Length: 77
Image (tube, rainbow, N blue to C red; front, side, top):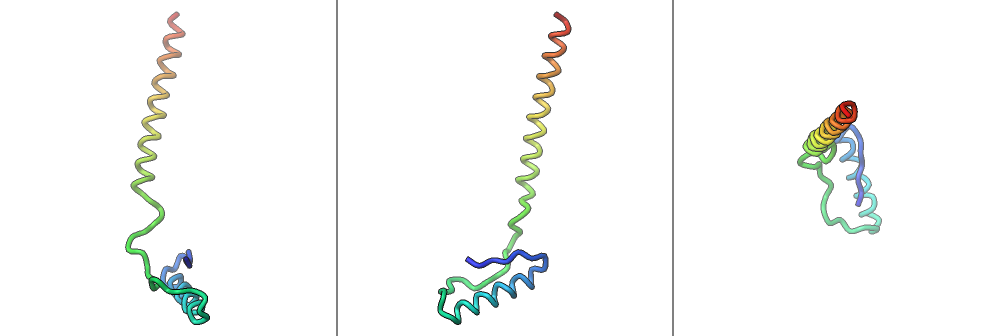
């Protein structure tokens, strides 16, 4: 597998195509699929980040409530 990570997607694609052509010309590898740009971004996975943030906030909120209850309970006794 040959890949290239670069801010300019067209330059990255050109580099991968050049590498693939170079290796294919030397009969080092067999090309199964020509280089192409992804249809959707791979990273960052925004829905996963939002979900993790919501779950993390809910857990921290629950933890804060439990700590607050235990401190209020211990102050009353």
